[in-house]
Image (cartoon, rainbow over all chains, first blue to last red; front, side, top):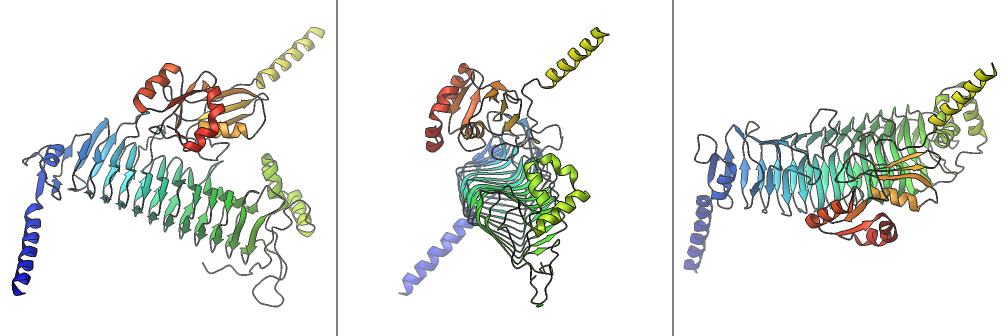
Length: 416
Length: 152
């Protein structure tokens, strides 16, 4: 028995020491044995660390084809000189940490990226900087990969609209995208056919199209992100079971700009978010069975534009404050329910003092309905005539959706 | 005097006619939105545009969005134009263009549908990326099949 234990301990020690002995650090730089990163990778054994010196390397198409850690500082720069891709991860369990990758040229044929994960799993890309890389981090058929703490900036020359997405995911499962900053790209974060993934704590701003964009993706969460000054904030399209919580949608201004676009989506939850200073805070088209609750919608042109093809959404306990239009729609009927929201234009009273208004509230003003039909009539905003017809319609509804009613409006804003 | 009035009338008429001239309009990438799916139009390879015979212009972020829209509505169009991979950001007549459906070329709305200005260009691309080539008429004919299969 004792011999077996000894043998086991011996084996264990041998394994551990063996591991330590194997994991070498290979330095790359002009003062080191390797001056090219690709040479160092070729010489490395699996689980070695390739450490970059603080200098600029001019290399492209570096393939990491074994499980390695590629490390350095932000002064360790790999510059692609506006040619092809820079880093291609072609093995499982690769770590790329702390370095700077810059200058990938754009192409109409190939979606070149600063760092591409090519059909491999368990990659970790953290604390890197990517500048002017056409596509930034591109996950192609990768699972269980983490992209964390990176700064990804496209070209800020505003004339150059041809840029790719900062973090692009295509056919992935279980990805974590956390605490990244993206700007000046097409979309900040893009998910196409990506399931069971988390987008958490990122900041996306000044991207040309969207801060975050879902296409054909299911069972994903995004929370605690900030989307500011993008073409539009977030677009969730053709997707199911997306949870959207504690995000901030700010300053998405423009004739076709949204804070959040919900298009053909089913069964999600949108709660505890802040929508402020957007042309249209939420635009819903073909959105079904979504719970929209506990959000603050403040100082937007339109707070909620919800089209007639939306069904069984629940709009509950939100605060509508200082918007030009609280709710607009193009339909005379609604299949959604509105309960216990705070409406700043509610003019009812609460005689029984239960906190709920005694008169139901109709949040769609006649003018909102007219503008939806004849957009140019927006020039009449704030005219006396409009105020008059709004009041008339409020008292005797004839054109606005008859059943779009909040029967329990609250008198004080929810503490959110 | 009579002449002057006549001249003015002709002038006004021609102005009106010029003002109403029906033509395509360049897509402003990064600003225009898709008429069908509401997405912003950014990719200079995949945009498309319809102009009705009354001159109303509708822009699309992807050729599949334009076809989907056309099929949802019975209407005559003066222009049906598309972006192509070989000449990005230009608008080419859809009728004379060819379309490659290849898994290697993802288009914005997930149909893997890319336009080419000429058949030769499409054939060249097919050698590189694989897939199937369709003419405009064939594309419309087989649209549902392509849409459902994710062919390529």
